[in-house]
Image (spheres, rainbow, N blue to C red):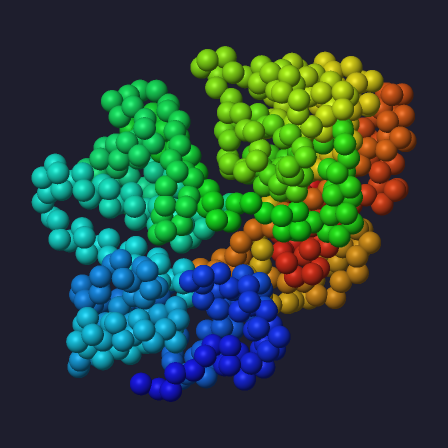
Length: 541
């Protein structure tokens, strides 16, 4: 075997990182965490750069497993649990040599273990973590199916357990937000929502539909005999030693029950304010806003725009021993230490408004109301903010300024809205350009015109060409774009005088407020996202 070398030394030799960066990363490394993972988390290097360094310095080739012809008989030689735990997947064997794709080809202990257990010489190649996990889910599952051409009911139950586990493992590996199990006339389709887009991953025969749905229902403590009414449930479990929260929803359709599983990775849910992709001025203003002793702060945007993440980050920022924070949510998405969280339960009459009335008698300093849904909850939230409480909530409006007429439409007296409202933040999620295949090009005349209208002069724009890391989409991950309206005395005066929303919009534009499209285009200039993504979610005024 070649001389064993350290990853940090290779990266310093290649000139990619300094000794200080390596030492900092080593000091922040958690128990059992690998240096490469820390460097990727901190954004010091991309996965492509890491693979290129290992390939060049070690002479170990890299492969893309996206379309690689894996020999299914090779997977029999390595136990699935071992493969998953150590991020390896056997590809083929010939003349006493087993070729194994590894995320870390410098993991010499794993190579030794493989040589002892298989009796073969190991030839490592490098692959990305996501590629390896996806290959394990695909090829080991295929082997399981081939081993069971005919099953009795007990084996069928066992296969459903394995099947659901593999579906969840794939979801976590792909960083999916939702898993859809769609029943068709002749089959069942499993789709994953990754970075906001749904993509088909597998199609199963109709024969597994009932056992698959029954397994999910059992996990979520739902009624497995009820298939005519929708049901909702929740599971707190571990997938590949990662704690996850699963929200389950079933819906009867003409071809059987459709199941949607919302995946909440509990290791990565709680972000700090600094991790919310806010532009510097928005960040400072939002921090000042939430640190006020009282007032109403609203977050607006459609479902799936990251409002909950921002709310939880704000609550977490304020969560200290000397304040009493109470929330009313439907559902409680993430459980926060030191925060009193109330779950809405309509079946017993515990609504948003009833929960809000009750918590006002619990001596709260800060209240978080999951959503303002009706006039009653809106009025209580407004009045609570006027009696010395800091109140957070969400509304479904297209922009920050549109929240003002929405509250008035809910039959809240304008003078109450004016007195209570401190600030409104609108946000959307856009896809981030894949760092491994990011490239620049000249902007078109139309794009130049768009930038110039917003006061930006650009010579180049960025896109993702598509590569194995992003599965040839050009995008990897998502980020938020924001607009923050801080309600000042002039806006209050305009609201009291019943001035139009367009007048208020003109005033805030003259005072330098950045709208969603401004924040999005600024991030496009920096090469974080594309113009297409910004225009998909933000309207040019």
